[in-house]
Amino acid sequence: MTNPNRFQDENLILSDFYKEVWVVCPSCAKKAMATVNFEAKTARLFCVHCGYNKETTTALIPKGTVEMTANWYFEVELWLKSPFKNEVFWAYNDKHLEYLERYISATLREHKDRTHFTLLEKLPKFYHEAKNREGLLKIIAKLKSKR
Image (cartoon, rainbow, N blue to C red; front, side, top):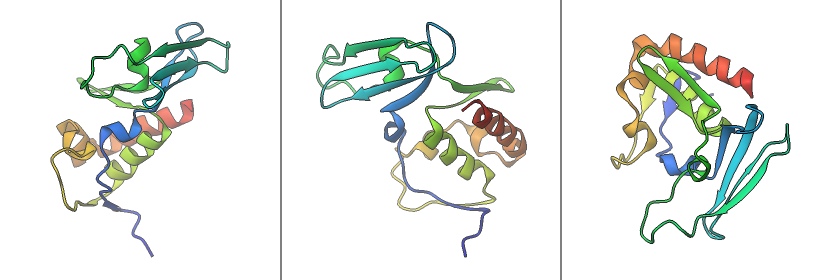
């Protein structure tokens, strides 16, 4: 049986969440979806609420440039974000939010084979601090209700 207070790092990196990003629709301000297909060199923004639909190419990004998040191509705001003290808590999508929730809620956090490039190693300090656990979990619950 797995201990619900234990988190085992999966060594995910931020770019594992780049391809599907929940954003604020520029037309109706409801939740929309920005997606990117790096192989096809396209990015798309679509809102199921108002039908807003925009597609663009990612081919204009200079060769050798790091892949960017889906929302970057449209300069739109993230849907899953909230102020926290003097910081901003955010997630790209439900999978990213759930990963952060599992990490933040854990009282025992196990890391293996760290590379200095994992998502958890790059998080701001306030995500790691036990004193912020309760407040961050309240924000996560609020953001989950926005889904």
